[in-house]
Length: 264
Ligand code: NAD
Image 1 (cartoon, rainbow, N blue to C red):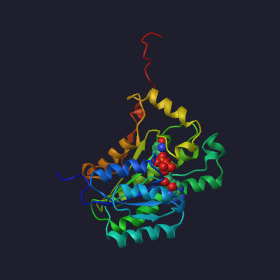
Image 2: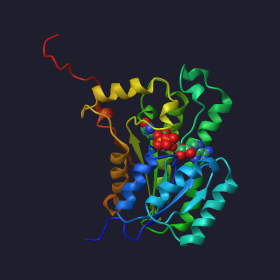
Image 3: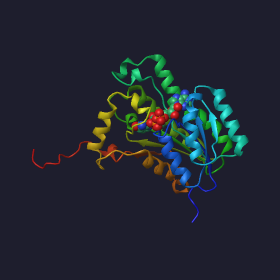
Image 4: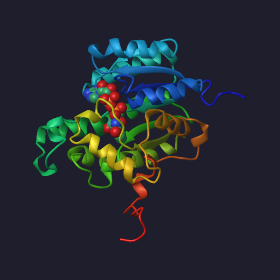
């Protein structure tokens, strides 16, 4: 039988190294037959991202910093010249000054608030504006979010506020683009040890808490996020848009975990 992503072409944004969620998604899509292009932030990441991209076949690499509109324009010009048309974009990008991913949310500075919102929220919309010009019906956009958008999680702070806005933008764009047959979704991943996550205060404790309290009694990994991304980006997800799919070992459904010993 034909592979799920055979004949589909798309862009993966947010690959920094082999621990990146973007890498778990790239491998799942590549295994399913997708043709991939990658964007990376800044020249110093190229030496890491280049060999990874090459290991999945022909490397198609574009430099893109989402704080720079000209850089996003150049990326999509490059994709248009390469393929003419694309089927999907994976946005796995987020950033906040790590000095504000600890302590109190209320102390957030205006500069870091704006930067966090720009890179972690607006960039998905800015990328969508450019991507949809190269997309027809069946096109699909995917971003990455976290439970800190819905509930207060330790140290997530301004990033939680940004993820709440990102999730809202998924719903608004799902409505805007649904008429053109383009779907927009997010995956809300449980905590995974990556470069970005290492900036969050007490991250090891957060991982341990999730492991002990999630219904599956464990954490998820990049590969599992990749498999759910494959579902959302392929025809398997054709009826799904505006969705925030939790890939978190079920953590988001738990109000209070039962004590394993019956009598207390
Ligand atoms: P990562 O550090 O591997 O990836 C973050 C990426 O964002 C990097 O590739 C970095 O280059 C890119 N980036 C930051 N600023 C940028 C800019 N100005 N222009 C272009 N790219 C920029 O970490 P990750 O955990 O794989 O993060 C990917 C996404 O997943 C983020 O949105 C993150 O918030 C989200 N997420 C992570 C977790 C987790 O526990 N790791 C959980 C839920 C959601």
